[in-house]
Image (tube, rainbow, N blue to C red; front, side, top):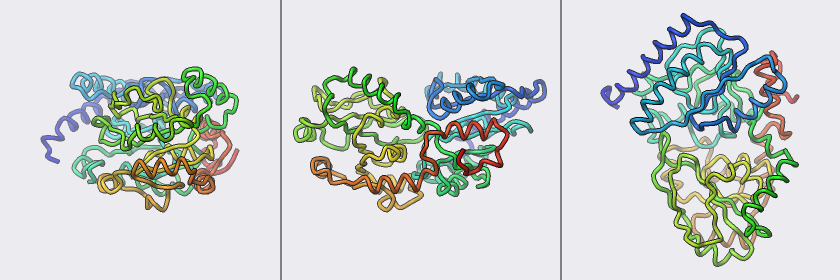
Length: 396
């Protein structure tokens, strides 16, 4: 990558470093200030929301601040985001804790002041697709030239993961010591243990989609394909009409795409077998109401394993995906369910119920050290309770 191409990034880097330095010079750290920040959404949600709720209930001495702005890659959006990142530098300089759930550019181009802790609540469970520094020089990942200017995933004080097994992979991806990575769980998965909430959810879901009542719910949730924040138009890799003909009497198909996938029309036509869910329900809710998950490389199958329900894998572009991003494990050896790459085989598996939940249960035990719905409680206690060294890997 030429320096000319990197020049805008370098200019923004030094602008943010300058502002952060000035904020550190003129403002003190607020010992009660906790900032929750994300570029993934315009509102508080997922891991951040669960830890935020726990903090408000049990650690009221801390005061929350919020930095949520979904990235827009248009010229106007980029300019607006620069001003947002300047504001972020002020919050980083003055917060006791700065908590994120994904990549966050300002953190990687400044030098955090002593007394500020930057906490990474990574948005996905387990470790499957390579990410961060594990993808250097791959089509999906950063170039070495870029890393000379931006130390991606640097400056984390601590990070939280689902199990001890995946700590080495996160240490590699974040280039951080393993002892700063804690296997206390994934906060948003606490949702799957809320029986009353899920019972109410099912009532709300079937009130919204009464035509699906009495049918087995299939959920298709593919991974994001692309780089940065956007993906080209997405087309379904199987024949929905054929599935409707052979499965429509007993099954319904929900389709949920990653927020960065820009497909607006999946060309489902008048097909009442398949429903594209965009905003009505979030992914955790769709996982909770579904009877079977169909996915490819999305780590939602880690979450789904907590429900103990069957999973079918549909990796129609596996070789291309390995070349562009790759995995921490051998794909076929790791997945807890059958793998198919054509519509007829997919239909056959569903009709014949040619899958088992035994593999799913074994997978869950391997990739979640805790199965109790108390991840947010553990992590909040670990961050705010003053016992960071004593609670590593222990159940509360």
